[in-house]
Length: 279
Length: 279
Image (cartoon, chains in turn orange, brown):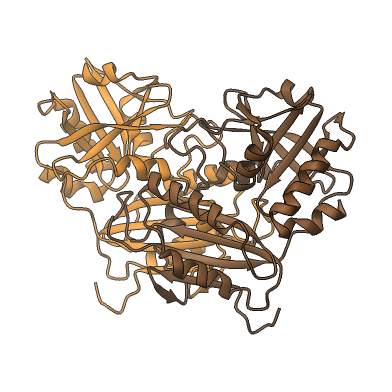
């Protein structure tokens, strides 16, 4: 893209601003929500699904949202070259000062940023590890893509080995929840299942697509349920569906059910077509 | 103070900067720690205790800290008028971009800000309520004054009644942990006790002072332990020690043990002398 096109924009309410205010509650408390999504040829095929999730999160946090039409317009303005890429949106609670009490009248502080597509996934499937960091059980925040992400930062910092692609996280109760930046599905026979996200974890947009497409069950999954699966996949709204080839010592061969799902995803969201062909 | 004296300053590593970068990890993930402390006549009596806590938190999060001498110098520079007030410090992980993985070589992004002293506490003692929001059990973050504070934001948003001063929080297990912005101590006979903060809650600097001063026990406290107490106090490093007069229907008369502790605190930290006399 041209060096003259900005790769981020910031807003307070409806007004564009030059910089984050120092007293942003997003900076002080992580008091916000975010969305990360794949842009295809300058368009956002799953925009409405991301906005629906954002609205659900904002309702639970009583967070004011930007004007929907302005938000979409400004998001598209970061891709004037109709390129492929990644869009990240952070909507944080407005109002500064000190103290946890929110100001219900403060307009939201929001940021849009453009990023390159991630590198193609490892050929043959991802290599995973188990993380030691456990996710706390917090139903009040479960499912939300909120900006309190120290658990994920700690989990991702556990390894620094380019041979490992992702880490699987368990809750403090020992249930399997997700990867650091993706949801997880496991296949037993012809039945897919994925962890419930009513106590921790993020209700991923790609997870919702896979759920609807496969009729997967939402369940409490143990590490044994993963080890014993016939196939495992990770998914998110930037990478799509990624087959898992290894988890510590356990290996999986490519499974036709995963390949089939990837083809269906490529038809549902054209941005995923290229990667799905490559892998 | 003069309108020409700035009330905040921002730094990346050792360099002063004009504004928060939009891709600050503190804004994206709450990936940082903070300290809030009382400044007395331009000095910071408990500075070393705050820095010790900050260092413990930084070690646990593998967070780079600012140069200690520069940090203290820049903090004092916000009080050139030798006034009383509140200093807030946020130290967040440097390095931007997308993705949870931290960059171990990135210098920290930190912010200092000056705030007025809070209004004097309610005469006769604080009025408290129980919060419905529960604190998740997360030993990896327990004790830290980190910037993932959505739980506190949700808890503080539960009431909007100037007749209520603070809310008490329980963990998801039902144990009493703290108030939204203070630690709590309860007195039974001559024995003080305070919740352990090994599973959630913040290891407050004033809490440490009260622990050392009273020989309080750190225990799992139930709501009944609070209800049945002979006296209850809240404490933090901005307000000092605050007696509690009411919790829902339960009331407490002023207790000499609390008054005595407040006098001792006023001797230990001169900034608290004024408030302790007033109340």
